Image 1 (tube, rainbow, N blue to C red):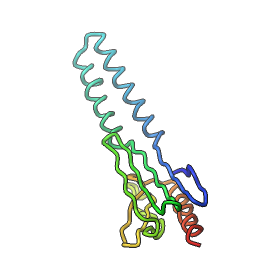
Image 2: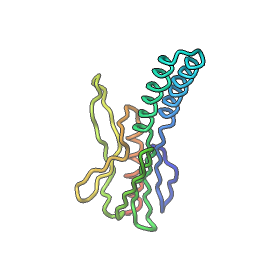
Image 3: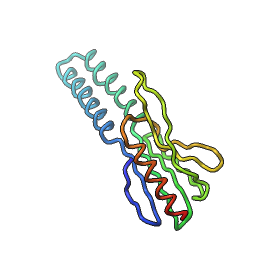
Image 4: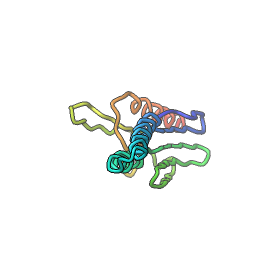
Length: 157
């Protein structure tokens, strides 16, 4: 997640998985292009396999993984808003800012034992809301958590 805005009144985080989306889009273009090449040569079976099946798999992967997430903490309106935008649709959840207790880290282990993390917010009700659908092995979740907690501490002081 990347900080888009950090002021006394607002903290906005954005997460757009451009590298993943571009990688999947590259595979989509390769498979559909290969399918068109086979079709132009008259090999309809290969064209269907590459263009249809391969392209369909790439489109499915793109629809399932490309997600834009945004967390907006706004002291002026007293609201915390979490937005998710995917190919499948948009969701938006808003809480009163005083209902947000702190940011926390959700941890899991990958298939090879690597520790994976994702940021979440902990509400005063005890509910933990993940900010991203996927986990990562990088240091981004810790930076996001630290920034959210620092902003909340400044706002509450």
